[in-house]
Image: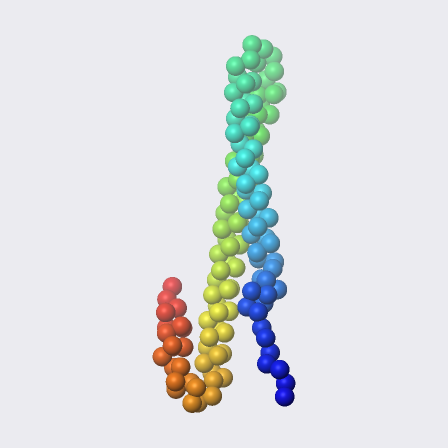
Length: 129
């Protein structure tokens, strides 16, 4: 007799959705980097403003202002992308789980399906969103 097929849900999800999880992770990492850099940029800008020779270093002031704007823009865009990537991953995962439950219901033997019908129906009937 053949041994039953052992399938790991976690390994299957990691294999099929690796791209979305990695994309969400690295984009979020980019957002965290931008978020951490903003206080340092603000501190540099304030130090430049308080310097005695700030008028003679206008280029440095423009650089701090552009740096702050770029970091803020990077932060907002990367957070939006991270939320989108995570949302797409969760939506696809939810669809896969619903399909898995429906497939299980469709392949149950008749006697077992009658006995477990209420529990299985409860699993996919609560799929509201």
